Length: 189
Image (cartoon, rainbow, N blue to C red):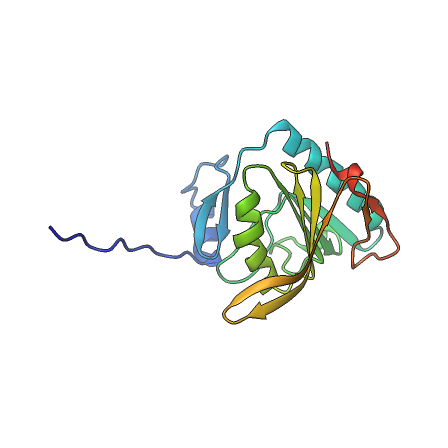
């Protein structure tokens, strides 16, 4: 007996937006569009929620006037990806984005427990391909901050060329706000 190959179809951001407008997905369905695939987001347990709030607070202190720190809202990476990072820093204010999601964040942060592999690999490649200069992973499993910088292309893949693992006693300065110092411990629940 022969088995036919399983065919899949990738989604575009435009198709995804039309499906949302047509109420195809339940409103509380935690979906993200990543490289044309609909991915169900990990459940948000209390440590995840606390860390997300702590990151947003720290980044609001580090980025003052002229910056918008958004929490768990979509960003428009390219024609096939619309992730919803836990925190993203974009230029401007919420009213600057009345019809379209922000497309060029200066910093994206994911809080990771069970999603650590997805956040490191797929999301890391997508953020690097989009040219996002700085991507942080608040790694709750190991209680560290992973700082990914210097997006680059290597063959047909994209990755970050500079990755630092910072322990709770360390601090970090965002590239887009170099005068700010954020203690890693302040990002961890």
